[in-house]
Length: 168
Image 1: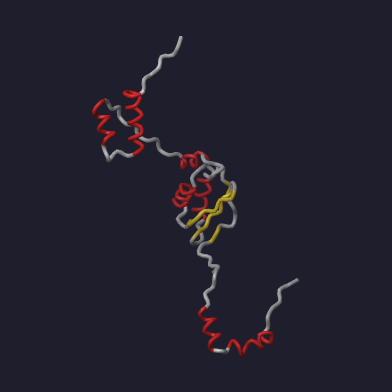
Image 2 (image 1 turned 180 degrees about the vertical axis):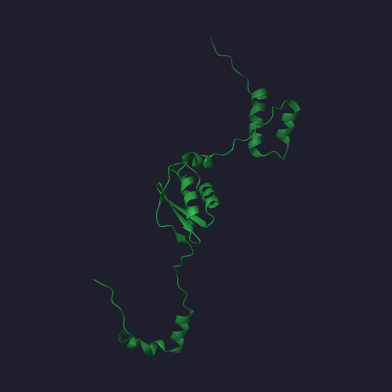
């Protein structure tokens, strides 16, 4: 069944009420609950991703912020990404150029580049400390927590934990 299209004769009985000043004030002060505004344009076709995006199910996937940053570097009109399964849809603030679109497709088709986005750099190795230097590091308030834990592990192994000899 189709929608009924209201005509002016259908609204005629309401005209008297709508012309009432109190009713006009109420209608003018009404605020719409939801507005549908399109601030950006989505590219029409989904782009297949060769690698998974990081999620609860895929903790080793490519982080979405890193993927967005890499795509923005290739195409400056991109303002957002929508990922559904292994497909990605780009949201643009303006119509993208064909050359920029090709750059994005080239990036997305290279799984090695995408996997590199997800890798975190390995933390620098802390030089081996002995005795007083290690204790100073542990007692210092400026020592970051991760570095303090590494230093304490070294201190505990060296000074606190007695190593057992394996029985023969």
